[in-house]
Length: 299
Image (cartoon, rainbow, N blue to C red):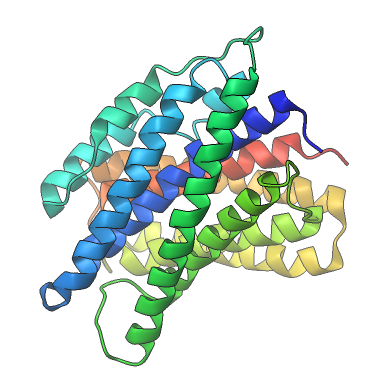
């Protein structure tokens, strides 16, 4: 059972990370559906804005209440996030509430913060509303994937990517379900490593597939990362924890640096691809998140 302080911190930190991830998933879906599916585009926009509203509320309660290492991890926002949002919104015409990002840049940690019963109640409410909304989002994503696989709609995202978005949503769902009981999800270390190494593998494959064929060096590097993380996923089945953590950390640091350079290159229009800058920043934040998890694992 989590203490009040632990419950509030874990809830806020998980929501700050995943609410942003979910609303960006919906943004990517919204901007990659075709005009003929205007009903699904509208639904994605509504769900996106609902998660934006929740994130905006979470940011208010999070100030001074979250841990310093979360802020320093750059998993919530990076120095590129705001610019990536502005450019991607301009290029696609889809809305993004950049005020939330600006507010997140001002978040602080306060060691002697007072974790009150009132705040605990507020955070419990946010968790419940996030869970209810997340159920809708998972159902929506699964519906789109089924229609796509049946050739009833066309989305300019890989089916594998839609499956990837569903898997991340379900991870968030499991976290919120556990927090409803004031606990954390029971996930063995090797299972957690396998999940996130597979996420990193997917990212590398998506980047490879979305780079222009002329970007041969970047494509080769992305392909190498995909093979590295595929091997780590396979090794997680044998589950030599200490060795796997160290290998995963080294590989994730490398792909984090690769993603950081790619984000800078895309923002400066120096890389030919069909990767929107916000997607580059999105996967960079996920690498930062995984690195922070790896650093906190105690074996």
